[in-house]
Length: 529
Image 1 (cartoon, rainbow, N blue to C red):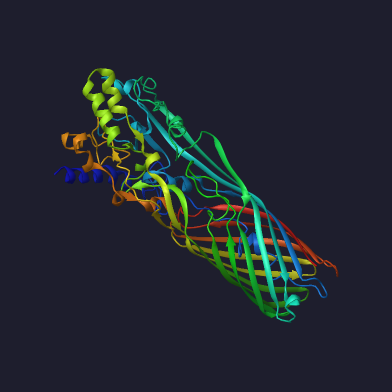
Image 2: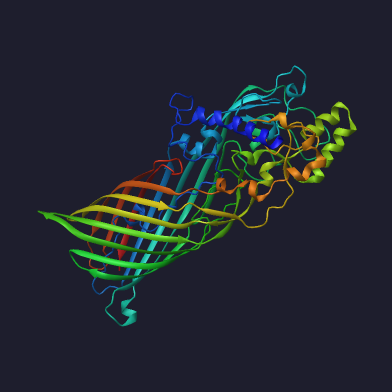
């Protein structure tokens, strides 16, 4: 009976919020179905820049020419930078209920709010006083991704070393990348509830007075948002090593194929901060294969028009990463108050049994931040990726103009626990005292279920198992993104070292909020020898 009641109350607490904010253009968040495609996810996997078949990599450098009697070398240097757009779209990816603005209240009943403040260690004087006014605020997440770097590609013809005319070549490429992710909590406090309550006996657990302070509290080991902080990461964004073969080369057309490996040199996700900066492909090894081709389309007067096609198929292998996750059907439940084990629940029950106002408040508040429990090492399989780039290039004298379209598709990540989940964790009931509540949500305390059936004596009945975990909330879903771009180049004719220089810009976009919309700008220089 209690379980059935809990399920009904759980659905009742979540459904109105979803109906109110998804697909309704009249709500205060301006939400629509595409923006709500993904919500309450803990990790966003950004597509790295300067990868094979990406515009900043291949523009003006599709199949580089070799000079006669040269050493067979081609070198390209590219300086690039990017900035994300559409903050609302990105914030809804991380936020629950597809909302850009979340209402936070200190609730001891079934009032309507998006977040219950007690789950974030906010218990105030007003909230613990009969007739007092508890904490209330409105928060929003502000997020932005920036990236800059220098990419280097070196390609060398190795036919001369094989004593044959077959045009084999090798190539090595990698960008030195700086990634900066800005994440901030913007908060408007409606009432501070008189400040944090003075509760003794909590040990290292320190109450905070705002959501800004809550996301930065030192007790949280993961899922933090430091106020007004820009987290940065610098490093080589993986090394691409290829072996290629030119099937056809000529003035009118050319075709080549390659196989290669992706050698990870970037950093691995640690989940300490929300939207942490990652250099490279999350530290995964990979295998790749692809093709490049060019062909004449049209020639008139002093203009030649070419078509270019570049493709890449990549498979990234499994690796272990640390990520946070929710409980099934409960957005942001990773931040719920929990008992870490039976011993902590028993401690709260003993304090409540001791009696007295001070002990009563301590028994209610004593808990462990859920984010410390619901963050674990996960085996992550990114699996397949495909990139296709088609372009038109116009050549006149020493000038080159290129306009192109890029298509990127990526499998949904598959994630599994790297270790068994047997921590003996249970969701703490709103009124604590050792009692648990397996159906509590981030926006509703469901106090109707705080009864003797969930006392510390029946703690084992409330222990969470692996079947309660929503590991998909830790995985980046499948991606389809598109890029339009343009580039301009100038060739410096030289018999010894032919050179070129160019600039370009692109814009990436997609239908859902699982895609990072962004501008990318680049300048490049290259030569043959």
